[in-house]
Image (cartoon, rainbow, N blue to C red; front, side, top):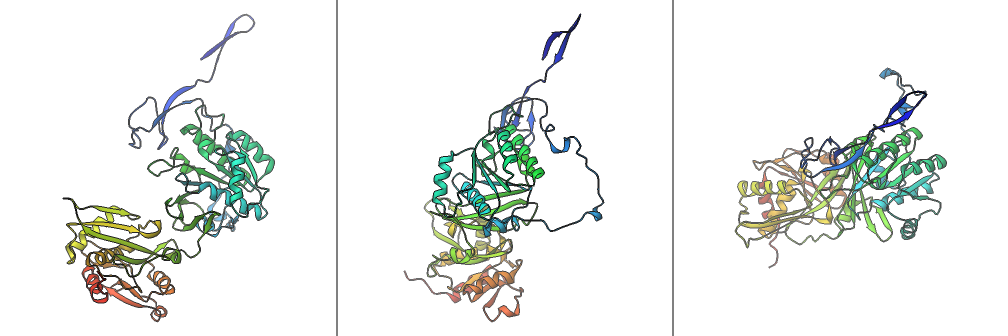
Length: 478
């Protein structure tokens, strides 16, 4: 585009920045010159959306390009390592997942399904930090100030001096950020924010990318912890470009079922701590409450006299938890038996059903099998294989598991039961809750101090586990 003017004696032309149209993938962020049904980079279908772009605005305003900013290389051995300061959220389960608290200058992305409690957790975090004497700024682009006040009134202990801003323009947020100098800034949500550097609509790939980069750069420059609340797509992945997950320091996923009160907080990425930790919450009328002893909560409504149930100690990071695996085997009414799983991987259940049918005398080929993890928990650990096999066999034989028994072990395709990691930690948690018989893989050893609290029962294969079930259980009435 050219603009024509005149100097003394001759005309001149000025080249203006050209705005062009590209098609960006909402999944991976790749740009294509024209619309395609399938993204060539990530292979996803129907993910290319149109957006207008101009000259690269990411360079302008970046701290690395500010006048006087210089970067010099340092020898690795000369870098002084001091203890990373942490800002406690006063929410024990949240601090556990973060690795001890918020790191100043860090950027955290919190994602989850609509209605799961992301905004409630973010507001409670800002309130706890404000109550501890720090400064918090809560920016909402989805709710009005009145709606935030009504939600805060339902939550106990929300201090009245929490700063709240209802704004969607990033530049306005930065101006107030400079003025207040908060210790933490909450953006709810990043998909509602927009900035002048991108010309597309709020929520588009360009806007999410540019707003997140602008806010993250300022957070690191100011040493402020930044919590971004993000939406998820229908397949459960975070909405927006994939570069958003690479930009932030911590990626958290808030999981749970609306029909259950349990909520689990997991870290998919954490530059300041482990990604194996999990935080357990319950959602009530007073907001989210941290659960310090989830095993007792998961087993509170367990029926020990019902066939098809087995307890397994699983590990979430450094925390052992006892969960109940339930199975129901019924006669099939159709030509093809049904396999329905809730809270556990379908492929894993299908594999164990084949192993049980082939390596033991349990007939399952003509039976419908339903598997559920009680409490809305998801179990992905292979250490739960033996317990699941026993739950299925218990339902098929109509024999209940002993009330004081738990099982832990991985099952191979040959039917053998294999060892699992950190067995002593699992056994100690089971013994603490009153379980006295522990089914473990043959050859595995437990600490000597635990032998007085429980009896280890070595299991060689699934056939031996089924034989032990027959010998130690009683036939259910009816």
